[in-house]
Every structure is written in C-alpha cells, then in structure tokens.
Length: 388
Image (cartoon, rainbow, N blue to C red):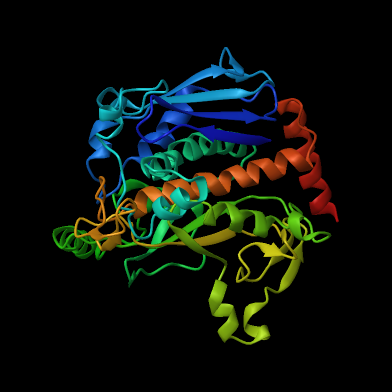
C-alpha cells in the first residue's frame, strides 16, 4: 500500500492516489469526511477554516461502497480557488497578474527561502503553495481510509494533547483509546482532562492578541495491534522508525518519542524495561508499556504509544525580520493567514499519519489481495501468536 498527494494551497483542488488497498474493503466518502471535519476543528483555528468545508470526492477504485483493488483517487476542492483563479492559473498570464501576490520576503521558520534557493524561484509563492499545511488535508484523507481498514480488523487509534504551549497535562499511564475518544474526542482542545480547559483557552486568546503562536505535544495511542509488525533484520524495516519518519514529515513537527520516550534516558534499566508474563487467556503480555509497544523495531502486542512535538506555527502577525530576495534589504516577513495554534488539528493529522503507516505494514505482512483474505490472514496470525 502506497500513496501520493498533489495540489497547492490555493490551487483548484487537492488530490491523493492510494495503491495497494485490498479489494472488498467497505469505504464511503463519509468515512473520509468525518476525519476531514475533525482536522478543521479545534480551538484557535483561523480564517481559512471559515472558507473551506472539506468534502472528498472518490473518483476511482471504489464501486458500490467497496474498494475494487485498483488505485483509489481522492479529490478535495479548494473553495478559495475562486479568488485565486488567475494568480494560480496553470496557463501563462500577464506580468501584472503574476505580480499581484508575488512573495519575495521569506518568512522565518517556513520553507520559503530555502525552497526558493533550491529551485531558483523568483516568486517564493511557488514554495509556499506546496509547503503549506493545507497539504495535510490529503494526509488525513488517506489516513481515514487506513483507519477504516484498521477498524475492520478491530484495531482502534486516537490522539490527545499532553502539552499545550508549555502547559503539561495529566495523563494516565493505562489510558485506553476508548477513554481518549470519550473525552478528548468530544472537546475543542483534544484534552482528556478538562479541569483546566478554560485556562488553556484563555492562554490561546492571549497568544492571539500578542500576535504570537504556540505549539505543543500530541500523543497517539493504538490498540489491539498484533505482535510482530515490523522487523529487526534491517534498519529500514523497523516499524517504529517508519512511524517516526512519518510523524516528523508532518508540517511543523520536530521530534518523536515512544512510550516514556526521553525519560528513559534518565532512569535505570530495571525501571524502564517491560516485564513479560503469560496467561492461557491472553498469551504473552507485558507488565508495563514503557517502551510504547515496541521491542527491536517490532510491535510487541501492547498499546502503541507515540508522541510528536509540534513547534509554534512560524507565521506571526507580529512578524520577525527577514530579507527581500530581490533587493537584499531588511524587511518584516510577509504575513499569510495564521492561527495562534493548530495543535488539536495537528493531533488529527498525526493520528491519521500513524494509522496510515500501521495499515501499510499490515498490508505488507499479510496476504491482502482481497479484504476477506486479509481478515482471515490476520485472524490466523493472532491465533498462532496466542498458541506460541
């Protein structure tokens, strides 16, 4: 299973093509639209979310509500394109039109300057349009398909925020996916404990008034994943490494940890390792989950726990200093639309990105030409694990 995304932030549409899905997987546009709506929510979102109301159109690979084994094509229209028709036209246009939204003042923290240097652009809008977080719309759309596959295999996944701009939140070590969905999934901050929710909202409001932004830390948990996904035999087959790469590929994400993560570097081995026990009912389990469901680059059957750190959004309404690439004169950086924080939305993106990697690994490990075949393969494997 692999996928590609295409499209610009203010272009006519965003597109994703997924290849390698098993035939016979139940899939509707609504399965995807639910996730797209989640991505556009959360406290602190700005003006673009008032313009767009993302709805997917499935144009290939699905017939009568089920995948048919051929590539699945997903399209999401950019409604704001009507205001950018000439500026973002594929055909050549007059020079005066090209100048209307030309960008020569790169924004610190964005891809603007380096992208312009790499591709020799005079107009940095060519960089901005593709490097924009608008691209994560299709990462979520693809993830929604992956989540559907996981759900049909009784694997569930959810996210919540564990740190909001430096404010740490209390997290239970044995927190279940069901608990996350029942709490964080129901509020606009994506937090499990709402006891200080008003304080966080006030903090976000203060940040917005100051023309600044904040980031934070997102935690994703997945349950009922069979042991043995991934492999220790080669560096590029380790599943935790694949997940780490996918998380850091999300706009503004700068770090990843599993289980207790960097805290493991401060503790003794006897305090970190997860003891192994066996029962006739459950087979092999662990007495704790400090390693976040991974051993040797493979899932060990415990809850997968992944955290990603998102930096503050680099577009500031009180912009930092920059340099005009045409004149080399100092200027305040350009300002596009920005939010004081997009952390709850980023959590939805991360959740779907992790789901995608898990679905890809399952399709790689198990026979999956048809979804019935995949279900049987997974069921047989689970049985074998329990009997080991």
